[in-house]
Every structure is written in structure tokens, then in C-alpha cells.
Length: 164
Image (cartoon, rainbow, N blue to C red; front, side, top):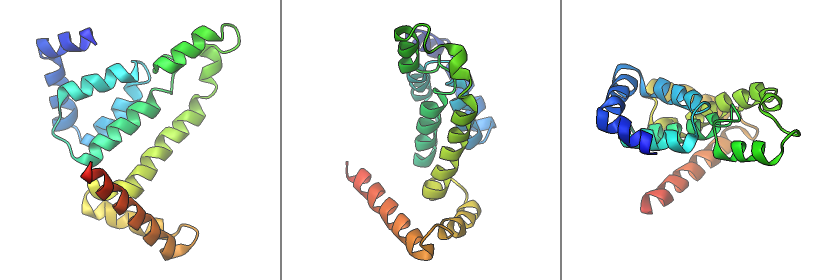
């Protein structure tokens, strides 16, 4: 955490923020942020993103939180819980044994980004992409009725969060 403060003081986080959230698309930046969080503890990484304070939408904040959390599990060194598990299970669970799960975790990583875009796309995707997601949700079991229930449930969830 002190290192993040030093990087911020020296201006490196401002440079990184300008590159990631101005030069690149924020969605691409957040997906890359999740992959980087596999190599750096995701708590420290999120502190760095919060210190950068990029001007991004609510949906992008949800996305960077999601990608940093799930991306931190790609490698055993990306989250404090995994490092603790490695220390407690010497010989049973190792960095190499964790690597065999990386393809499954990566599938979950991109699957969670896809579900986030389907459910919360109106908060950060351009209108044209949100319009494409609506028919996909309609293909869920139960048809249009289930799409309406999902849409109503997510609207209620976000209105409840807005009151907090």
C-alpha cells in the first residue's frame, strides 16, 4: 500500500490512468486490469485503481471490481487468500497444482464479464451493444418472461443500491 502511495506521489499512477482510461477504451482497460491483478495482490491493485480515480461510469466501476476479484484468482499469487492457502497446505496444494485450474478460472473470468455485460450493459456499453444483448437474454429458459423478470430484478437491485 505504501508503494501505491509512492507511485501516486511520483505521478506514475496518473500516467497509467491517462493511458488506460483515456487512450484505451475503459472496458478494455478493466479487462486488462483483471489480468494484471493475477500477478499483483488484488486488494493492492484495487487500491491503486481507486487512487487513480479515473472518470468512468458506474458500470465500469462494477466491471473493474469484478475483473480484479476474479482475475486475482487466475494465479495463486494474485490474492491473499490463495497465498495463505499455499502456506497452510505445504505439499498438498502448490503453485504448480493451481496452474492446472487456470483454464477453468479463465473461462469463468470471461464468462463473468459476459454475464455482467448482459445484465448491466445499459450502465456502460453503447446503446447499440445493449440492444444486441436484449435478444440474447430473451433466449433464456422461460423466454421473454424470464428476460422481463431479470430486467425487473436488476432494476430493483440498482434502485435499492442507489438509496444506500
